[in-house]
Image (cartoon, rainbow, N blue to C red; front, side, top):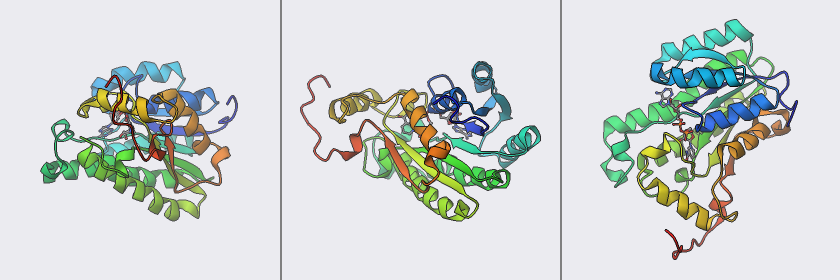
Length: 264
Ligand code: NAD
């Protein structure tokens, strides 16, 4: 993919460490020639993000907590100052209280429902509002979703409801921003062991189940998600918007899953 992203500048939000999906995408885009800006959420993650930014020569655009609109504004002001324009944004942000990512969805509290929706859904729209102003030559916005938006997955609970709303947001934003040649898409990634995923009940079992049932008989890596993201972020994907691309080793197409997986 060398040179595929040459001349493009993109903001990648959601790097927590080198296992983050956002990092897989940032690295793939940088390797393909893009200039990257990263944000971090709070001081604890700053220490992790700074060395990663240095590794790919990325700009550190500062702290961003999407529950604090002023911090989103500050990041976009920083980007405007440094670059004056923006070609792509990766939104790889989600949160829900860990104790509600297990057991029954019906127990979800109003407080956690609202918090989950604000951080995992509305934040994409908040980011798109600001990105639109800087995407003067068109652009590509990409978010991350999961199959739990489409089907009920054990323990995914309120996050599944949030991902369904996130996927609907992708379609509405695609229409609103399409006039300005700004594309909005999502990647529906298969399960990957990250910091956020470790909050989901029985996650190791979910990984094994996917390995056993996916057509490719394995799970996917952040490098594979990064490579697929290049298609949507680059001009190769210029005819694609409002789409949810599954990067899940094919898991979502299998109707009849095996029940007798030998080693799970
Ligand atoms: P991760 O823990 O590496 O990344 C999650 C990021 O969200 C972190 O960088 C965290 O700082 C950020 N975040 C949480 N609350 C925030 C807030 N209030 N403000 C700003 N940032 C905040 O985990 P990940 O698995 O790489 O998650 C990235 C995205 O991928 C998420 O949307 C997740 O739902 C999605 N996803 C993950 C998987 C998986 O199995 N790991 C599968 C499909 C989709």
